[in-house]
Image (cartoon, rainbow, N blue to C red; front, side, top):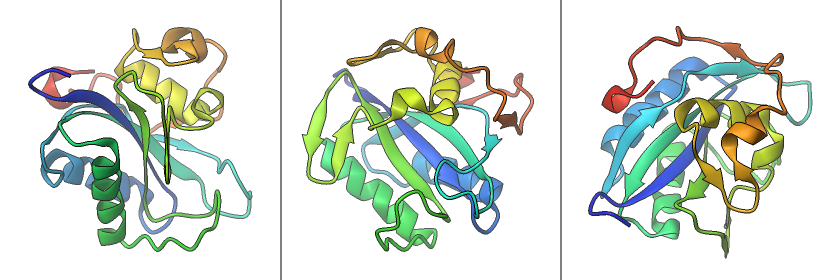
Length: 176
């Protein structure tokens, strides 16, 4: 951990209401509403078909890079508070429609198996809507137990993802 904290990556997704606006609001909230945490990068937004039941709207997904001094469960609770503030109601439905979903994908290089939190996020390596935005944001990143994100990204052609932004748009902290 540096003085700035530990590097963390958070997956963001929404498919109800105005999903694009929900994801942008999540970036805004991550930048200012999480104590001891700083947003340092964000991927483009991508539209993609739902992973679960197909009788729901397409998702808009993205990935945020944070530095935090919070403990893993402290960050999880802060993310769940943002979800709740944005209208998310947790009813136990898996892979169902969401107003906002914030998932801790990586917490430094830690492997965690805590109540309600598993890191790296289960299934991360099999989800193009996570791997490709993560590779865009941090191309040299190593995923514990999986290897380099660049290698994982080569397994996907990106055909199911539609970028919603110009790839040359400036990112937080000058990142692209």
